[in-house]
Length: 86
Image (cartoon, rainbow, N blue to C red; front, side, top):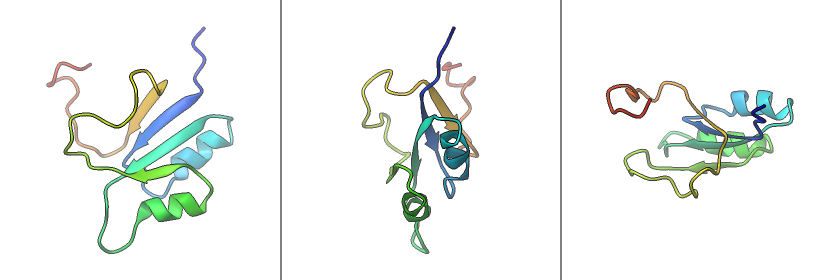
């Protein structure tokens, strides 16, 4: 049986999905791009959730292999099948 405990939420918006998962005892790290008009990451941090500003142009995130059980990516427009990753 697969037990999920950690989730990486890419493009987290305001951390609503992470807050929902936190209520189900799942730890979610939210990561989003820097925004000039106001940071969504700041709002996520104010909600008490872990979050960071990240660059999606890099090829590797700053986490060790298998750090997260699930990666959630809403509207990141990455074609997983085309890249052969799915």
